[in-house]
Length: 263
Image (cartoon, rainbow, N blue to C red; front, top):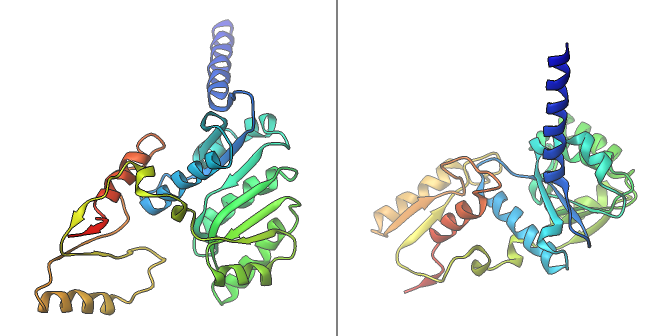
């Protein structure tokens, strides 16, 4: 019994120390960036990096911006509720996941929006998409239960169609229209210098957001081959797992494969 009690105390000390390292802050303005991606789509990792840089440009010291993956937030949910006060800014990831195309991302966003009803929350530039069927209609009604009741929520659209959808669907959240947040950065921000190139590079999506039919994609490839064009193909996915620690290097590596200047 005594041994078990000692082990329990040691575990609590270890967990509290992890909490302290996770959430400790210097003095000054504070921002929490919740839901940084762990999946292999490097486009979303570029968005995460661009958001961090944008917050710095807005006056938040880097040491006062804390970023957390979904799994970290879920693991430490109780701790967040204790340490985040109503003056802290909370930011959600931008991208193309507002709607029912990526339900896990949408439901995770509800989780932290509902948990902090008195905090200013900004959802960075998003594409808004709900399917035009019963599933989409149910998803819209579910989203209203979360987005419309939050008094300090701002949702940013990254193109006009999504902005118009926001205005049509939701009454209460503040709505803004800006370009994708990655467009606020340059190659310098990712540590990539200007390079020369020759030939062509085809960058095709291979996930649920792809809009080009397979036959159209193949027609492009066939045309290039028939006309002896030099080209190669790529996508925005990483061949290795993405973490907070290696995100910048993987995005930098992908950027280097996207030449930036003609010969």
